[in-house]
Amino acid sequence: MHERKPLQYLAFLILIITWGTAFTLVSYTVNYISPAWMVSIRTIIAAVILIIYARFRGHKLPPLKDKRWIWYGFMGFVGIVLPFNLTATGQITVDSGLTSILVGIMPLITIVLAHFLIKGEHLTWRKSIGFFIGFTGIVFLFLPEPFKWELIKDWRGQGLILLSAICYSVLAITAKRAPKTSASVGAAIMLTSAALFSTLWALPTGIPSEMPPRGAIIALLVLAVITNAFAQILYLRVIEIFGPSTVSKINYVVPICSLFAGTLFLGEVISLRSIYAMMIIFAGLLIARSGKTNIKSAKARG
Image 1 (tube, one colour):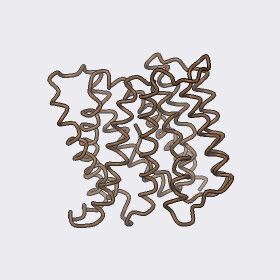
Image 2 (cartoon, helix red, strand yellow):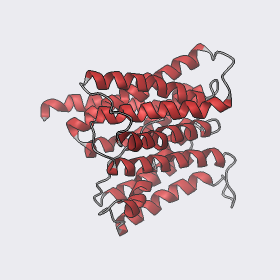
Image 3 (cartoon, helix red, strand yellow):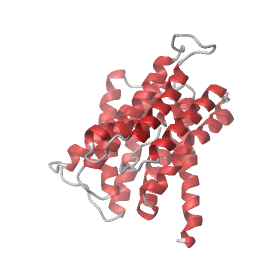
């Protein structure tokens, strides 16, 4: 185990940087490519890579009549297509760092949903207190400065991003109940289904008539190849080696990385509001997770 520690820390660092900069890349790319087509292109490329990876691992995709296509196809829609489109649309007006904080509420939402949908995952008083503390942090982000009884100007964009966090929670619940299959096959089915659904989502918006600048194309390729495909493969391998409970701890660091990435590459300002809200949400997560829960974090980033 001690021999694996350097490898573990390296894998965690790569995932933190990859996921932390995903929101930064999206914030930049939506200036030149519509959210719908951005999601479609990145999922198509990632799906091809994951199918090749599954075959390399000695696995084949099941026939279409296999019930796993229904389960993982649904997971691809609710866990990739919906949240990716919601987040990208929201990031037209919301900074990348703030986006990562809003998405970070996902584990607390999962705890509440699990109470109603997963047997044995009861909502204890400790989890309830943690949820309400974390929710207070979210409310804090929606109120203007100086304090008034009204919502901030970009509350609609923040609301869309918050809805994406709910989608990721539904994904986590569904993954808990889905038929067992190898991680590489499940991920390949999810991305393949997501590529189909996201393309159908994008087509009614019209085919883009202009080529985006080179920087946007590079950012889109990084999102597809690194953030979606490579990070997903690395994430699955790390879970196999070190377990889901260990991996879940990096979720606390990703928003911090995203805040600094947005400042460094996009010139975003780290506001005291964002820092206070992040601290409140983290406090809620720590309290809620001090009561054991069996739900695994199932989240596709960006």
